[in-house]
Length: 322
Image (cartoon, rainbow, N blue to C red; front, side, top):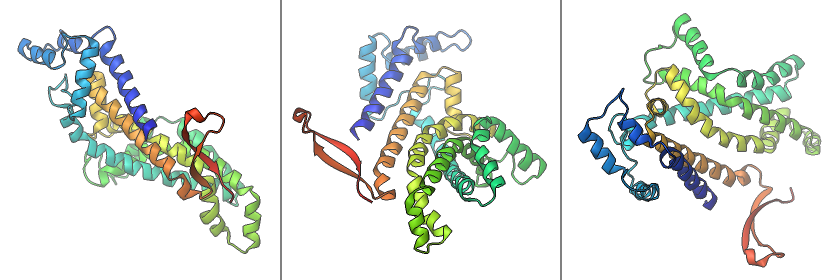
């Protein structure tokens, strides 16, 4: 938990420094932009709020204090509170990411299982190529292809209606396909290595069916590396939503991020980076904690470092006897 908090703090510090502390103040640049002038009275309010007359260090600690109070600042483009923009788009994006996550897991599991255990050599060869093919295909191209087939050709899904379950299917499928290749590849390797272990022969000798061996034992033994990578895809889901929501015209956090980057709306960009870092750290922390539930041989123990007693205690992960 300490490591997770440290990651979030360092990401926030680095992002703030890049956006606000480096030469070329983004707030003043936004206020003084001749193409989108801000009225002097409104500009003065923004200058006072962001304390632009003080040093960068003082601005940082003031902003940090407001952050702990739940104040994320105000958008330089719309003048609305950043928290309001988040509340407007976060629900749609999280739902999209959650459904896409489930689709990615389903795709990875099905492709990996059939790529490793199918009795047909042709099927195994075709499915083994899937990760490379899907990874090399841009997500916006996948989205446009799905729109062309299912909306314009077959008419099964409306391209204009983004509300309801029907409007969620194609964006989630696009995003799920985009984040599934790396997980699929690692799962194929993990299942292949687990299938070559001696315990598989023992299970066959005990009379277990092929489905029981795969479902009860091989998936659990071969999914640990894929689980780690699956947790890492959370950031890809949020980042990928920027493109997917633009293709399918969904009003979510991805669309808010795209507009903020395009208009150099630094407070919104800082809030998005902070949110993604926090979500990324929490999901990876959860993944670390559930390893032992998947593989009971993995246990977390607390021990002293005998060679360096001054270092105190540390957490270590070891493999116990099977």
